[in-house]
Image (cartoon, rainbow, N blue to C red):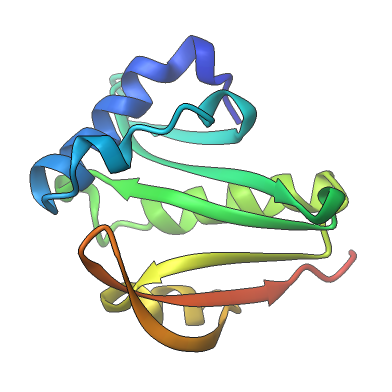
Length: 142
C-alpha cells in the first residue's frame, strides 16, 4: 500500500491513461476529491515505472470495504498484475478487519473477479458510460 499524497502523480497518470484516454471517461468523473481518504495499491515495473493501481474504501464503520479504480496499463494486461493489485487490496481489507468487500466491475471483467471469489449482486447498470455489475465477496478469517 502506498500513501496517496506521495504517489498521487503516478497513480493519477495510470488512471488517466486507462479511464480517461482509453475508455473515454470524463475527467470530472474520474478525478475524485476523496482519494486522500482511501487506501491505494500501486504496482511498478523493474525500472520503477507505475503500471497498475487500485484503491480500497471503508464502509459500514469499517466492517465492509469497496474496491475501485482498478487500472492496469494496456501493455501489462494479462500478466497477473491486476490479480496482484487485487490480492494486495484484499489483504489490506483483512488487515483492517473488514468482513466483506464489494466492487463495481466493468462487465467485460466479471470473469476476472469471479475467478477471485466475487459473486454478482444484482443487475447490470451504467456508470461513467460503461456497463458495470456489482460484485461482492466475504473475507474469511485466516
